[in-house]
Amino acid sequence: MSRSDIKKIEMKKLAQKKASHIKDPVQNVRVLLYLI
Image 1 (cartoon, one colour):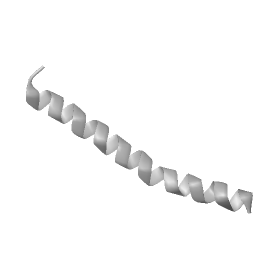
Image 2 (cartoon, helix red, strand yellow):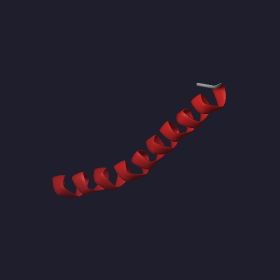
Image 3 (tube, helix red, strand yellow):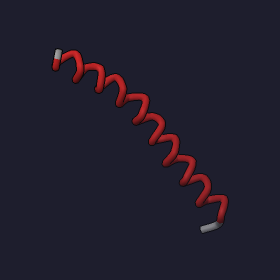
């Protein structure tokens, strides 16, 4: 594996993390609404 390949994989992982972080707040709000 070349360094560019590793960088691409790291960027994909970061993008997936960001995507999951965008989804998480929505779920957190739903949980808070259920708790109220």
